[in-house]
Image (cartoon, rainbow, N blue to C red; front, side, top):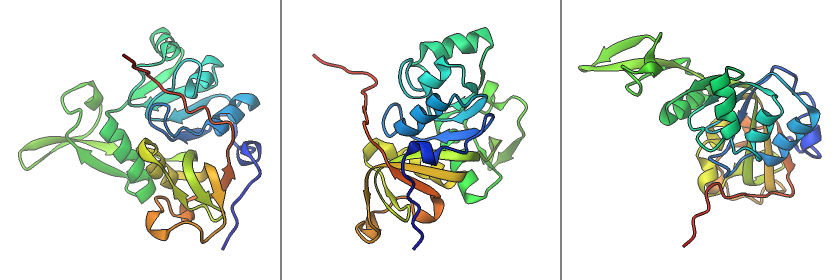
Length: 230
């Protein structure tokens, strides 16, 4: 069994170049690869294309990369919590592709499955469909959408083993598992790293075949995006 463990985020992200296309897992601020994002921030890697469900918040997650102008293009679904993202979008500083959330998920899944294109009704007749091929199936119009793949997929799991098998917890399963399949190199950071054989095979969400590097993260903040109290 191949041991895929690297020491830390610095080792895992050492060869990410300027201009890379990255997938960053998570949903809101849940299950985001905090350590990897901090390392990219520290290294000052720039001109990035970031594929993520959302753009973090102004002072956390991908929002920090946006503040430092390290992101050239965002491919996302929801960006409503980030004022800096909005400013850069409206001023023309940032290239943005907004995608319906289900379509984003399926384009990533298609990239991991080797499916170059598929048809979906979402977005037909709207700005989302401009310039895209459409076709009628069973009396209903559909848009053709193409796969999404990345140079590096950065994912975060609750628990993993030295062979790269991963288990996610709760909402972190929304985008991490499919992104793990769609990167040329998948880097996984985990809260707990265990030897091979300690994970129940029936509970594994991402098989280690998809993961090239894994490390045990540290100092996770696990922020709450919108705290509501009464």
